[in-house]
Amino acid sequence: MRLVAISVFVGHIFAHPSFIYRLRRFLAAALPLLLLGACHQTTDTLVAPDHPDWYALRAPDDRAIQAVTGDIDGALIISTTFHSYRTTDRGRSW
Image 1 (cartoon, rainbow, N blue to C red):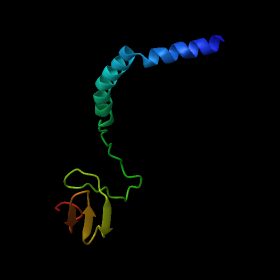
Image 2 (image 1 turned 90 degrees about the horizontal axis):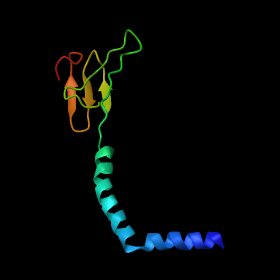
Image 3 (image 1 turned 180 degrees about the vertical axis):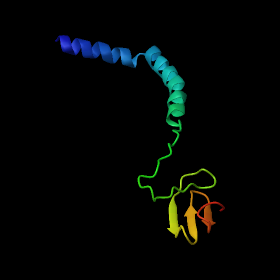
């Protein structure tokens, strides 16, 4: 009996127009904050090579490298999200 009375009371509160109005105002204020928090960009940390003979490559536009093909001693081609770059001097010029 008591459980039924509580559930009816709670259902009555949630159906009340002022509650729905307050809930909409809260969601209208909270949604932009949630979207801004979701758009936060993290900074990538540089990773040092694990092996002393390894050579770390960086794209000339400081973007993440998506693909690499070729030979570091010959012609090397890398691609980022928007561009492709070619080097023949171990990445000194692209």
